[in-house]
Amino acid sequence: MARAARPVFQHQGPATNCVIEGEALGWASCTAYSMAMGIDSATGGAVRPSGCKIRKLTGDKEKGLMLSQVAEVALEHYDIRVSVKTGATAISTASLIKQVRSGRGFVLQGNTSALPKKLQAGGPKPANHAVWVNEVRGDGNAPDEALVYDPAADGRREGIDKGPTWWAWDDLLAFAAALELDKHGRKLGPGRIYAGFIPAPLEEEVARHRADNGETLRATPKPAPEVTLRFHAVKTKPFPDRVRIDPPVAGKRVNIRSRPDRIEPRDVVDRARKGTLFVAFQKTKGATLEGQSIWYGNRRGTEWVHESGLRHVGGKT
Amino acid sequence: MTGPLPLPGSVASDSDGDDDDLVDGADDLPDDVPNDALTPSEMQVPAGNVADTDVDAPVVGTPLTDDEIGA
Image (cartoon, rainbow over all chains, first blue to last red; front, side, top):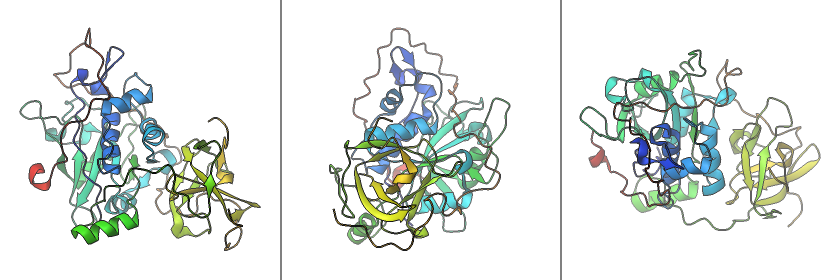
């Protein structure tokens, strides 16, 4: 079982912990602080932005944030594509377990109303909230516990939790299920999760780290190169090219694959919904779909999207 | 750049190939749900004349180990 690198814990409070253009946004920035810890984890500590920096980069100073906002900041400013699983792409609990055990930490959305009092670090009033979940432990069908970095858990006084903390797995699922979807109090319910996952560690990184250290901790990546051209690819023009996912079939999602040269289910690393940002650094000829064979890849050449699933190629998003 | 790579066959589009991670009844769920501002009892500190945060200040600390996190 792999696990993500642990980040430095960041607390969001007090309100003045994040002041932007005179607005005290600390307590309204759980999503930004959780994503900041996720970026720290995804880069093995090589990049460690503050939660307030993420908040500022969203350009949003109104109330709480959404997963899609911080995911776009992670990609555009830190080259980390966060796989957002919400709405029709909300994932099952079984898939969540599979993802986190493969070393993918995640920003989790939920509602504090379902938490035991000792974990309600943001106060007793129910609120939609985000936390960073780094790893789990327990080898059964379901984990026993999850290591949670709740940015509200600053231990500011006795009775307030100080993160990170091992949450009981059932507490985590209850938190996720209690997410309020609208102002009418509709809950997400059990069996589905709203979360944003950092990329899985590269197999070669995990293997190297296992050999060096006897464990499966995500290795600290080297500084990102300008681009690693793979599969006979060339750089995009413009470089990089900010493009948007545009499924050729309405209501479907576009597959993101680990390689462009074949169409096999095992190569699908993610599926992205319409409008999702994808930053293309390279393109190549690969498997043909409806007569088209151009594929666009990320900086490391580890994720590829067929041209039929993109729009704004070579233009402004 | 070389020519096209070997193909296993042509398919119509590259979308939704494997849905094992999806859940039933999710089609009407909203894509974006905002989080709320928390309201701890200690929060009532108006920004007033508080200076903007230096968002580029380094994050202080080190990742905690198992022993430091505790049980």
